[in-house]
Picture 1 (spheres, rainbow, N blue to C red):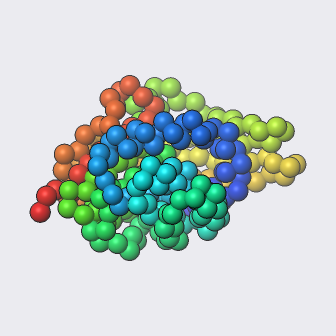
Picture 2: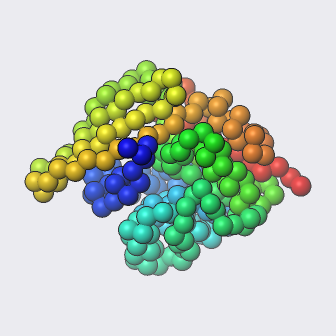
Length: 240
């Protein structure tokens, strides 16, 4: 069994069950926070961009936005939403492990637990790609799980319901490797489907060390690390 079943996790069921959670109000608040952390920026990459929730809202604020994602379904939804909002976003089908840009962007946003999908070496390669895709003095804004809060309030089962449909996450905490391993059971329209995913849990100190190792500096928390379920980290590419 692979550690992360990307096609099985990031599919139409994901959009269906998360839709009620990812409200317009939540998106507006998160984009406001991202904009504050970015400061003045022009060209921004959302990686991975998913179905365009953050990218299209950033474009509405006047950013020149590019989004990259591995899911063709999500990109189709993102483009459709951009058209409905009358915003221009460049959406690219691609793998976050192999970003095709060098010194292209003023800012990169990596949001909603979109880091830590791979082994440590590959996660470091992803971070290196972020660094290399940024221009000098560009800024990275990341948001992921906060391990301190997750471990303190850990629950092995999470239930998402929508009408008669259910999505059940059975989560195992791998304390040795600092990761969560999740079996996801989707019950929808009378059918049952199973998938799985793994996410590496990085403390702020670990993320700071990882980002420093690929060339970032001035790495700091976007919010107080002990105060929230989410861990937000801001890092800058140094001046030339």
